[in-house]
Length: 126
Image 1 (cartoon, rainbow, N blue to C red):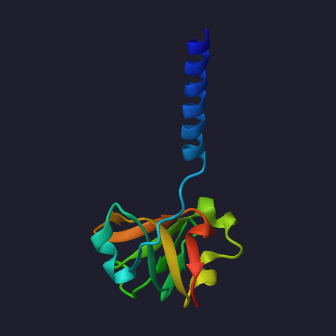
Image 2: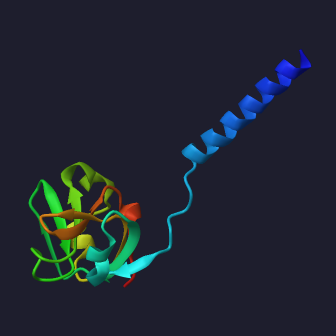
Image 3: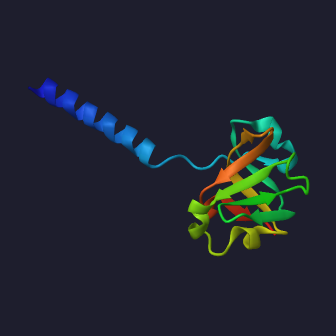
């Protein structure tokens, strides 16, 4: 009987530890890159830093661009479903600001982007 109780206790302890790991993820990694380097980090989750020089909100999506040639260079994408999470429209909040944005860099139409779902993913530097 004691052996069965010990096994049950060990299993419960293991389950509790695994649950804590899943429910309380680790801190965001502090790897920071410049927006110019983003294309070298596809598939990786990092902080990307740079100045937002152009922003456009189509009503369905907001684009924060780090270069005037937005068709070739890194862009932050915020879909309309996330707009309400921001204290003011993202295109006004971040335009002409140096920011860093956290997320997984993906390739879309030949250029790097991060899709942002929460203002917690963006920090204003200045």
